[in-house]
Length: 617
Image (cartoon, rainbow, N blue to C red; front, top):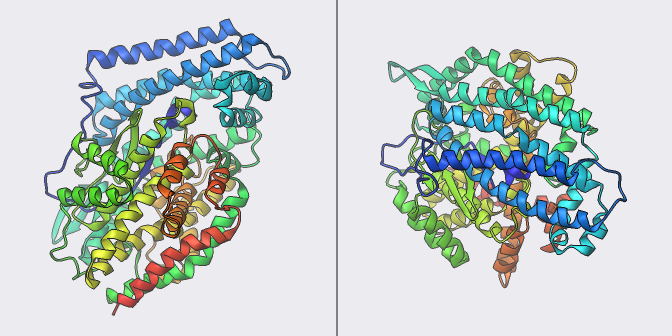
C-alpha cells in the first residue's frame, strides 16, 4: 500500500560487532522535538481527523465499488481531487509513522513510543478502508478514457494498471474492512511480539570464564569476533535462548502465515507467492530465471566457504564461523566513523557530485544513528521521513563491512532523494527495486577500497563482501524455500517449533551443501529473522537477491558504457514507482526473464571468489 511504502524503506539485518567509540545518534528534532511535543500531538490528531474526513468525502462522492463502463466529468474531477488529497496524506502519515518508529527502533523498552506506535496502528485502520474503497472505485472507471481526459491520470498510468489488477484480487468491501480492522490485533500484533521478544531477550552465556547475561543483539554480534571459542559459546547460548522463547515465536509464525494464507485464498491468489510477486512488480518468469542462476552459483559459494575454512585452519566451517573475521590481517586497518565518512564522500563524488552532496547532508544533519546499544534493533535500515529526507539506522563498528553497510543505506537515502520529484503516489517502490541504489553505492565503495588495498587488506575486503553476497544468494534461497514450505504446511495445520526448526535445517542443508558442517547449522533462524513476521510483506527474502544482482548488473553496464550513464541511472531511480521491474530494466537493455542477465551479475561475484581463493594460502 502506498501509505506505508512511499519512498524506499530498507530493513537489513546485518551482523556487527560492538564498539566503544562515541558514535552519532540521529536527530529528528527538526521534525518534532519529541513524542510529547504539542506540535506532534496536533499533527497526529489532525492527520487522523483528515482520514475520517476523507471517508466522509468518499461517501459524498460515491467512492465505492461500481460497474465498469460508467463515466462522467464528475469522475475525472473526483479522481484528480482524491489523488491530490491522498498524496498529502501519504506524506503526513509517512512522517508520523517514521518519527514514532525511530523511538521504537532505538529503544524497544520505550513504553511511550510503543504505546504511540500501537495507537497509530489502531487509528490507521481507516487507511486500509480508504485504499480498498479507492481501489474498487477506480477499477470501475474506463482507464483509457480517464487518461485521455486527465493529465493527472496520465501521469499515474502505472498506478491505474496496478489498481485494476489489485481490484481483481479484493474481497467484498465488508470483508476487506473487517480484515483491516482485525489487522492491528492479528498479523501486526504477532510481528510486534517477535520484535519485542527478540530485542528484549537476555541470554546467559559463559565467556572467558565468566557467566554473563547479554542482549540477543550482542550475542549475535559475537559471531563476528576472532575467538572461535567465544563464537561457539555465543552460538550455543543463542540457540538455547531461542529454544526457551520458541513457543511464543512459533505462535507468531503460525499466526502470521495462517492469516496471510487465508487472505490470499480469499483474494483469489493462487498462492501467497503470487501475491508477493505482484507486490514486488515482477513475474514468475523473472523469479525463476534468477533462482535458476542462483542455484547454479552454489558450487562457487561453497568454494569460497571451503577456502575460508582452509584459511582458518578448519576442516569445514561451522555456522558460527560464517562471519568470523580473517584473523591476523586486520591490525591497523580499523575504520573510524569519521574515516568512513571521508572515504564515502570522496568515492561517491567520483560517480556524481549530487550523490556526495546528499551523503554529506546525511552526515552533517545527523540523519544517522550509528551506536549499538541495548534495546536498539540489530542490523541496519533506511527509512524516508519527509520528501527527499531519510533517517539511517546502523550498528557501526570499525570494520570495512560496516563502511559498506553505511554506504548501502546512504544509497537508499539517495534513491529517496531521486524520488522526490515524483508525486507521492508515484514514489511507491517495490522491495525488488528498492535495493537498486543501495547495492550500487555499496559496490562503488567496495571497488574503491579494493583498488587501494594491499594484498592482506584485499583479503579482508573480499571476505567482507563475500560474507554478504553469500547471505544474499545462498542464505536467502534457504529462507525462500523455508517460507514456501511453511505456507504449504500451514494450510493444513499449525507447525510446532520443532517442525519449524526441521524445515529450516532442511533448507540450509540443501543450499549450503558441503560448504558448512551439517551438524552445526542454525535451526532457529526462523525465530531470529524479523522478515518472516511481517503480515503485509510475505516472501520478504527474494527481493534482496533481486536487488543485489540487479544493482551489480547496472554497475557492470556503468563500467562498460559510462557516457551518459548517470542521467539514465537517476532517471531509473526516479521512476521505480512508475513501471514494473521488467519494463524499467528493458529501458537500460536488460532482459530479466532469462538467466543470462543474472548469470552475468553472478559472474562479478565469481570473480571475487576467484580472487579470494588466489589470496588464501
